[in-house]
Image (cartoon, rainbow, N blue to C red):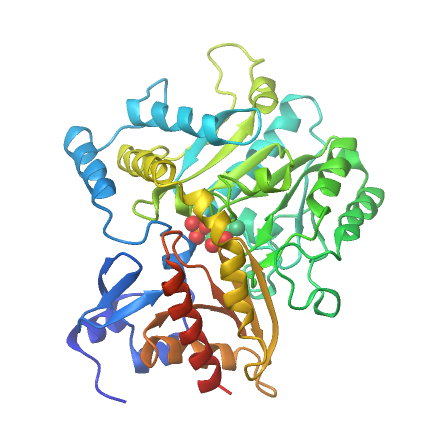
Length: 445
Ligand code: PLP
């Protein structure tokens, strides 16, 4: 191993990174990215890497978009901080909420802003509990998530999330949480492009959970329309509709966590539109600002908002909020991002590239150790066989090979490789990404 650079040494000495193997990190150091342009990022030696992962599922416009930079800088000069507490507001927040109302696929009346996907999820869960409470159904305290779901790292998110490694270190989490089964079955779904035919019946498991706990104790169900972080698991055909029918029947709120699927990833502003299903709340983050400023949020249906409008006028109904809810910088970045999505028709572009992207990803079938490939929108998951007795090691090696030998930004979850290029990616660049992934897969055979 070559010695670490000065910057890398300082990083190892001072930073506690999220989600890395700390021991190997100490020896190998980080890959330090200095700048980005289009679908490429560049390290401190000037070496370029093609973005197979849109940052962390967020840089749909790629990097260095001048319109976005200008909008953010202008806002910083004009008003660098404002908040929405105690009856105050500001122009960029109002503009943005208005714009979201236009593009949200459901009769949604209000947006609550926060700073990340994790906060958005915790916010939605709290709103669900409070909603039932103000309506006199305070016994509805149970929250239902799904196995293999990822909803960020707050206590609410890891409680409803279905990833054991995210849960097991952190105590008892929220009580009264139950989980639907995951929607993935390799036996029935392997190498499917788009939504698998098999699996809608798994939504009926909610009936079993309702029978076990009684609907009067259940506040909400939260699912990702496409589970991203556990390896790109698209909802089976008809699954989300079924879930909507059952939740509606029992007065249970349905929350779609669209932190990944929002803003064009599946070819629509929100995946709810793709599936023709009307949830009660949608959480979002990431693509709203192209990752340029931290922002998350929850859009809620008018019925939820209206339920809170019952108390005396001096009493706060929803005791929840963040100092940086609707931060003006993030709002300005979001407004510019949404304008660019619209002007460059990027959601439509994702939709029209979907089948070409799927075809390209499927060419990896037959490469060594490839057990399954799933695609939906501009997203693909590729399962590799685990090394004997070492689950996750082949994925770990693949990540190193992609960074160090193939100039590719990739994401891995265990032994699954995930691809999520920026929405501006060209067909040639899709070809380049897939070619590099093939090299990575062969390198870790
Ligand atoms: N929800 C989903 C579906 C996600 O994919 C993520 C992050 O990947 C989150 C929530 C958490 O978002 P953040 O990392 O911004 O807290």
